[in-house]
Image: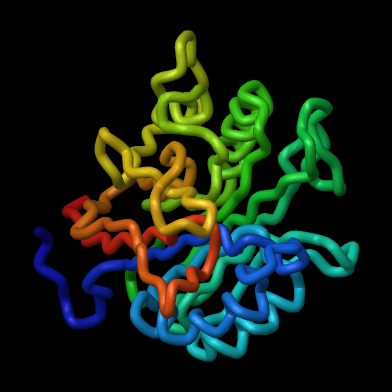
Length: 267
């Protein structure tokens, strides 16, 4: 492990959660109930970077109030009333150097989607500095079609090649796919026939057998490992776990949150 000087952050922590959009008709799992469990959850697992998917604007307002030590990127303004944002909060100790917000589509700089995508999907990327450390971090939410997922992964790699300038990078989100799928292979650089000048080389912070992250408000994983925290560069996971906390049987979402703490490796 690298010996750090006094002005270097000792590590970097990341949290991600598909929040489950607040306009859903979820009965006893509606937002008015779920938001009551967020204060202790976010206090317990507060991280340098906190990524949320499926965030309606009124949910974002609640998160802002609960995370006063963070700033954020990723809000679409103006946006339709039903819009679901991908939000990336970052501690105020990290200074935002550059950011990129785009749609997962053939025309990423205008509101749009791939033809086979059920919904418009987006990604938000940021490059940050704290003391003499620099890092890029992104948050996204993929659609369901495997080819759309593959093309979305390639697009994100392409946008990162401009933004990140080869600094360590962390990518979070709900990818609606297992690590056995083509999108994960694109990020890992192991896609069949992959021969691109765009640097891939991402690693999943969790090892096979990958834990399920969707539980449908049951508290028991019911599907694949579809929520990921990927990383590349001189980072090493120090701890990685699925957060299965509930309060009086109420869960913050139908997905489990993930939290990972990284330490810096020698360059």
